[in-house]
Amino acid sequence: MSARAPLDGVRVVEVATYVAAPAAGALLADLGAEVIKLEVPRGELLRHARPRFNGFRSDFDGSPQFETANRGKRSLALDLRRAAARDALLHVIDTADVLLTNMLPGRRAKYGIDAARLRERRPELIYASLSGYGGSGDEADAPAFDYAALWARTGMMDLTRDPRAAPAFQRPGVGDHSAALSLVCGILAALRTRELDGIGQEIDVSLLQTGLYLQGNDLSQALATRQQPPLHDREAPSNPLWNHYRTRDARWLMLVMIESEPYWAAFVRAIERPELEDDVRFGGQVERYRASRELVAILDEVFAQRTLAQWEAALAGHRVIWAPVREMIEALDDPQARAMGYFRRLEHPRLGSFETMGPPLLMSGHEMPADCPAPELGADSEEILRGAGLAQHEIEAALAE
Image 1 (spheres, one colour):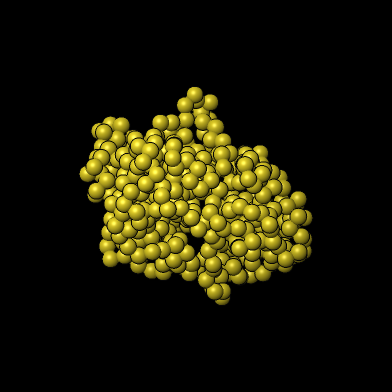
Image 2: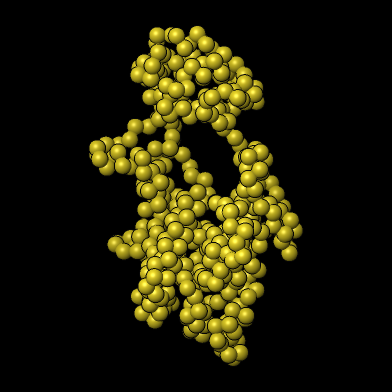
């Protein structure tokens, strides 16, 4: 392991709530940056969320999602409606390498922390912003969540369904965590170029842009053809070996042999239907496409004969690409995820010991333990302001309620 973390010595001031921008801040902290999180004096809403509010039958008295998005940070609580607090924040930003925010542009300008003003004050500052629809244009100031800007608006919600089903409902934070990776990528690139020329730059990531990028395969074809991508029809897919099937115990498994020809012989032996290999109806990829509905009916019958666990045992060791459709509670104990150390244990001063999701990458030279809890609200306010050069009376004025 390296003696220094990759972002050792980098200071980030985060003016952000909910998930996408804070998740980027957490990853920067994982990489060794000092991340100062600004919150309102009552704390952001996600800090107060509890699993029971989201349908979990649990008395866990913390916010696991807040912990995941804010681990390893320091907390500064200021009411930016007050002039003394705004002035104090500017002094803190003066000590930073990066300003990370998802505050709407109009509010940033109102509080004096818009990119133009801050970068005129300090051209070396890297200003990274996350928005719903981008930093310019008619919708720059429109509020958004990933459900709207990334999922519904981009066509992803409509495409992620069976032709006979209603559009699928996105799970919380899926788009936000994708956007966080783009934010971090841009910040790292800007830190690198600043090493070369001493000048910072603005990083603009939107949920709309991220949603379009995530659909790159479909979107590139739609742009070239000006046609709507076809929906996946489970009963008549273009490739029956790239499809999902129901098992005897009402579970599902997913076959993912996108190039089916190299796998066909091994597959029919794995499901104990070797006679299908020489069946002229399914003799090649084109033939299987033409007889797709007929082959799916056969495979539906085959997979319905055994439970998911029995199929896991039967398919083990065969040269086929597939996966069980897990419930999340089962994924918690996935042997490979455990072997790779993808989950981390937090020792929280108030909540005790519990597990959380680790970083989305591993490094050979930096451990990225990700085991430091999110800060208590305002726990570091005085120390941060003192470190930014404020006198005691200025600190008291900034923190006054």
